Length: 400
Ligand code: CTP
Image (cartoon, rainbow, N blue to C red):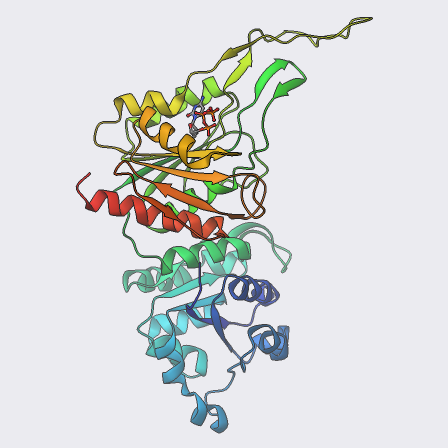
């Protein structure tokens, strides 16, 4: 979701500079235009050509390079940015910025920009804990600069402790947050995601193909836009997004209990989970052994419909459901919208290519109680999540 955004990526001289290459790749993949600035010592760790090749733009390295100065200049670099990300940020550059020293291209552009600046420090643990460094960080935070905490672990210098550059994926997420409008501030968004597992015996269960990708994308987008997010998820292979309240569950009954509890705090509920409609009437305590001959018949009982239960008590909350269908999409979705008392249903035909469970894209339709249907083109699940939250805001602004 960084399409059209201009990011200045500042790389300082630290061993973690090699991770900035991966960060740059993630930014470019997300659609951002990236301009790289390197300090002189950064070039001792990674060659500028690596960044130049991946960003498709010349790397800016020297304040007094006349050619670059005429063409671009540190002021124009500072002006064009939507966001500055300094990763890795060394104690030296942070210290200089805190003291107002601008004696090279990196510190001059940081000083000259009006864009938000994110420092991602990485250094030796003792340097990070040094009160001089900590004071500099506090001063910059007080002036509105953003910081990420370093990770703990085994450091390249041989020490163990805080000082590692966070994973580039996490820096990407923080970048997205800083570039998002904070238009969901004050909302508490409850998201359910993934499949449920209905236990047959200690080693077997019934489930479905839901990957959780859609719900996790909604949770991340809500967090980025300033909402408090509670994510209740069935078992998936996905990393729980940082900065959301994560509640793992397994069965539909467990999901129901946790969801009804979280409902009290929620102002918006988005139920993207693929809840199993049935569960085995009995769960065996011990592994079911096969009989010598014949088939096994499993008796299933109905699970409660969590969304319908929420619809009955929702009050002023905005309630959004999903409808995954394999035919007659519109009429099934319309009837679910009415039956479950929803404000919006997101319908998709899971048999279409580029839609459904385990892919990164979806083709969805928004149906609202006024009978309107909006058909969206195929887009990534991250984009669907943003459009879905735009729609939620539209409903909120219309007086809900
Ligand atoms: N849902 C739920 N609890 C259930 C079943 C479904 O909360 N026991 C929610 C899902 O999270 C989704 C919506 O209801 O938001 C629609 O789910 P779907 O499986 O498409 O529909 P069902 O209501 O189960 O209807 P059917 O099985 O007839 O398609």
